[in-house]
Amino acid sequence: MGGFCFARKEVKMTYLLGGAIASSQAEGGFHDGGKGPSTQDMRYLDGAWTPEQIETKHQQSPFTQAELTAALADDDTTYYPLRRGIDFYHHYKTDIALLAELGLQVFRTSISWSRLYPNGDELEPNEAGIAYYRDLFTECQRHGIKVLATMIHYDIPVHLVTAYGGWQNRQLITFFKRYVTTLYTRLGDVVDYWLPFNEINAAKFSPWDGVCLIPTPRAGLDQAIYQSLHHQFLCSAWAVKLGRQLVPGKLVGGMIARFTTYPATCKPEDNLQALQDEQYANWFYLDVLARGSYPSYMTRYFNKIGVHIHTEPGDAALLQEGRVGFVAFSYYFSQVATNQPDWEQTAGNLIMTKKNPYLTTSEWGWQIDPVGLRITLNQLNDRYGLPIIVAENGLGAHDELTADDTVHDPYRIAYLKAHLAQLDLAVADGVNLLAYTMWGIIDIVSCGALTMAKRYGVIYVDRDNAGHGSDRRVRKDSFYWYRDYIAAHKEAT
Ligand code: BGP
Image (tube, rainbow, N blue to C red; front, side):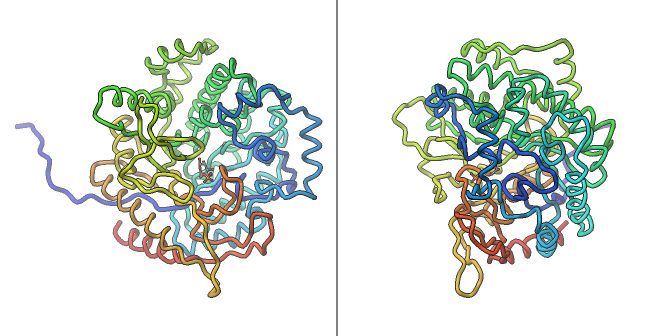
């Protein structure tokens, strides 16, 4: 007789434990190896623009090529944190050796498009850029560390903004296809997992980072954001489709910044608000990437805000064909949804959010919520049924180098311990977890705060906010704790 039973079986914790950085926040080497200027190199000009900030800026002229050139020229007299990073470009061999000492199983970093194509629209790549990433990833492999490479972590060559208007221009898809083909053919053998875009929902909450929009009048802002995003969705689909041909067997994924959202009360209106916040800020992006079409709730939303996305024949089929092989997210905090206007606010990652009275916050006001990580993992698993990568998670804090030449960071250990425990619980819940890459495994320049004051790493970097310091790397207490945790995790798998 046929049938099945749910037998008791041991759940294996086979996911990989790792660490993550991004090229624009770590590499430096701003002029080296033929690299062209990227939009993140220019970030000091504008800061991270929220729609509200853009509204106040929209009457200013957008940057001209002349302004950009002038800004690039005074590079040697002024310290721009993102241009200098932590000089990972010149330290990667010793940094990877430290990560190997940590026992890291997977390392996530991004490739700078402007290192491979300084202007973005050239026909041939810059060989020095390819050689750099080949060396870096080969070094990881040599130490038995897998590589998760992000193709675009916010930055694109500046020229693509000044000459083409950035992601609003459909022509960027042609340039991206050239870039991604080069990535697969020249680096495909030394990369294990690919992510076309970091936090693709940044388009909405941080338009300069997400879709590289120069100041746009409020009236046209939503239209510009969603049109740009449509082009990014198509690029992601191309990355999946070309990946199938050029790097068969390798997974290409999609990523959002996850804003786990709870209704403030059991009032139906708060629940409706939570549902819609989730749809517009989170699910929309992964629904397109993982399900391969625009969800129906966005038709209602686009009608409401007056957005009409220009599509071309073949777009819908491409989105279907280019569905991602895994979903990924960054997780730093959870938030509350309510339509009660006077609810207390606090900060979140590049956004303001509503306060949850049951949670404590980081020094930057971000609400610390380990259980929310388990909830999110379950939600993603239920919704998409795909492997999942926690691509970013960590605690930004002020660290102090002590007289005994280390950093005592029990707060970071407590944070990691609490969040990592939720991974095992989620896997026991049935979640298909592929990997966890802790954010800022080595101290890097903070993306939102644009300083070295906000540190995430288990490895301290001797560099201050003004750019002074030896760049010496120092193991923090959390280094030894994470090393032992990874060792025990490996033992258990
Ligand atoms: C994410 C970005 C990262 C990183 C992180 C922490 O949104 O993908 O680049 O910076 O946030 O943010 P911050 O550096 O502002 O603390």
